[in-house]
Image (cartoon, rainbow, N blue to C red):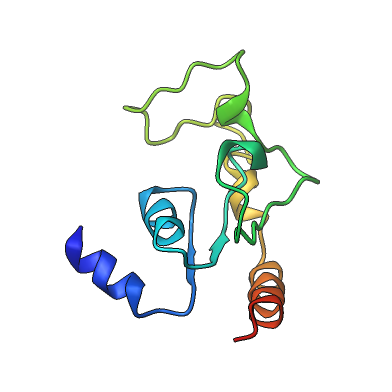
Amino acid sequence: IMDRAIDLHHCDFFIGIGSGLSWLAWALQKPVVMISGFSMPFCEFSSKNYRVINTNVCHGCFNDTRHKFDRGDWNWCPRLKNTERMFECSTKITPDQVIQKVNELIQKEGL
């Protein structure tokens, strides 16, 4: 983890998912472009978080109390599992959406 902290210390910002590395970057006061549709925005930190989420498709199941998270199921998609829409919360986030957030971050952070 120290190696990643050193890497993050020397970066201008971090692009990742709602995982430990995003939290580590935030703890090191780096702006984060967080690509995450499976959790709701209130679930992660809000300062310097340039979140990419597509709310036009299924999203937020991680915070839906009707579904118990199964950390052993790498195909956990409680609402759409085994359908053609499985994981659309992630797959329907486009590169253009990410680029737009990166450009917003660069402008707002003065990078």
